Image (cartoon, rainbow, N blue to C red; front, side, top):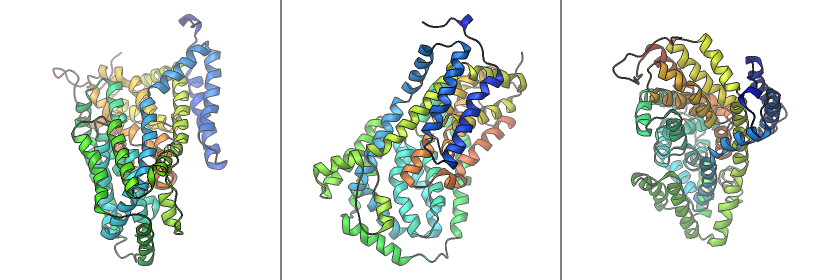
Amino acid sequence: MDKTLSEVKKPSLLLSLVPFLALIGFMLPGVIILEVEPHIPLIAASILTAFIGKYLGHSWDDMEKAMIESNAMVMQANFIILIVGMLVGTWIAGGIVPGLIYYGLELFTPNMFLFLLPVICSVISVSTGSAWTTAGTIGTAAMGIGAALGIPPAITAGAVVTGASFGDKLSPLSDSTNLAAAVTGTNVFDHVRHMLYSTIPSFLIAISIFGFIGTSYKNTAVNIEQIFSVLESIDSIFIITPWIFIAPLTVILMIIFKAPAVPGMIGGTFVGILFSLFQGHGLKNTLYYIMYGFEVTTGNVLVDKLLNRGGMSSMLEIIALVICALTFGGLIKQIGVIDTILETILRKVRKRGSIILSTVISSIAMNFMAADQYMAIVIPGQMFRPVFERLNLHSKNLSRILEDAGTLTSGLVPWSTCGAVYFATLGVSSFQYGRFHFLGLINPIIAVVFGYTGFALARLDPSKPIKNFIDD
């Protein structure tokens, strides 16, 4: 039986901080020192939060319902994660990813590689609506190319994540883009257009930095023997043909013809299946690759590491992480700690710039504490939506900030869903590539600058000015 409002106590600020402090306390030593998976600290923090909820008078039925509803919100995302595993497995088996590595090694030079890589990844990500798909396909190929060109894996991964995040953020097919628009009540295309103000400058700065870094590798002695060994290994296993470009082109065409994101990605997987059959793997083996990923032993350690991946089973751990993260997120929202924290913030923070800074910090903090970009969008979005309305700020300002600080910084958190997916697909932890994810580092700063200067802030009521202060 549901508890009445009179039976449920409101948490104090100190008690509201306990679940987050506990999560950090469980997460940091658990992941860094004991090297356990982040699922366990999330479950431990959720158990503690449930005990706090019982102390406050919440019934188990209410808390369980909140956990279920929180996870229901991202069922499509879990389905997308499975499709990413399928797509990676078939694109490797079909020679698509190996072919991209092969041609990339023949075309790229060290000094131009880092400048072009985020641009190419951004185009693919806009087309597919998925940064994870980009990381698993083009990103996987890029890691091989970068290694052969003598570029550190952390820098290559940072360029991939920067480009993939940029494209995903601006794609109307992206789940995070649609979620940010939905949470704030913004038209998705208005949301995408408004994001250009902050995202384009950030991306231009990022690729300029990568271009500068690339110049330090222009005189690098490329390991010709290693490149030849990689090319030879790939050529001995796969039929390398320019026809492989049909795969990414097919996905792009599906987007042009406005196919939904999930069918578009399934279409790309189907093309991968056809290419796998063309490579002579047979239907039975191809279906195995869809489930368990591609497997091969070439004798070349680098090639084996790049090609032995993919499959739905490889993504089950990621889905489990999403479930654990959203379970914690649903609980902290249900027991009222979010409301308490917001009320505390608004007692101290009244000016527009400070409120936008608080929104940015809240989104980043949710990525670190709830370990999921969806929670970094949903919870701050729900918290600050009425506040933005009181300032006469259009909802598309809030939706943009949620992506500037929530979506883009998720890849900086090792135990987040994005951090886990990038580690699974690129083989590099965000502990390593994080300092090279320049878009995620720059974009939140620009969002704060816009908040204090008032630049590119749209009014909710065009006939009234934007307030700089919240009245009581």
